[in-house]
Image (cartoon, rainbow, N blue to C red):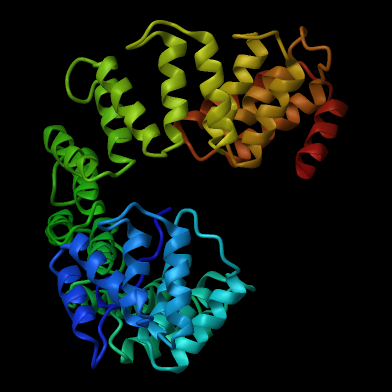
Length: 445
């Protein structure tokens, strides 16, 4: 899932009465001249100026004008904090809550810094404390405390807090669920230019949550978000055109266009969706080679779902030469990444001895892992495995119990009659006592 957006770093460098080099460093930063900002801030930081030290922390944290170096960023933030700079406290908090890669810091320390900054009136730090309570970083979530700090931050001018208030109200967390009030908070933050608020507002229209489902209105707001720098804006426009939403008919060409725009901005799901479109004949004849390229791109960007998609192509020889060993390795990686469908197909590969020896125990383990994630097809496959005469651990009673489980947890309507038919056929070969024992066992699964 995508993370909550936090206070913008562009406002962290203001200070009254700065020395001239720091003022010039700030102006250079805001103008996007990061190299000059670094030179000017370095000179002032060497003289112990905490504002300049904070600015250097921001530059190193984001890799603006300098190689990204989280350790150096934190070092400069700590120097600034030692000089009494409250903004540096808030910036460490933001970096932690935003999941900055490579940041190693104690959550309790971050919380203490945010408390200090919040007490000094820093709205970003107040929003950060709200996030600590909202997410339950140090303890169970406390939505009432989260709301308290979000409201405090909003009163201090933090529009991220307005969006976070909207999320609490939308989900009914700590307050009565009210879609209309949630929408108003999102609208307020969106009018203030907050991209995530635009995305959340558009999501309501795309899904029809608290408002009539309206694809055109959703696209309009997603466009505004995209113009403000959103990667998700063009992605969701592509999704609307791919799937069709009331008011907007399916248009695969338009879907491809917007997914490509999102992909160019670095999104990791857009190339995955493009792969599906090209593979499954939604844009004409299947183009497996192009699908393969998009799946690879998704994986390079960290989308582990692509392990499964690439494994299938290697397994079937679509777009690439058949390579069962590569398919098996990718399927194992997909399963390790937590994808139930990869766990299921890994079970099949182990059962059939694909790119390795037949492994009934390993197959059962893979199916059980997928079942634990609610994947009904794996329950049906495990039923078949346990009923197989070739399986040394054949157990008809357990097979039927998993067959019943598949029926109970299935959420794919087209599969239900198939599951029911197969379970009925299995029951026809069993005694009444066996069926009774399996039914009892099903309740314990």
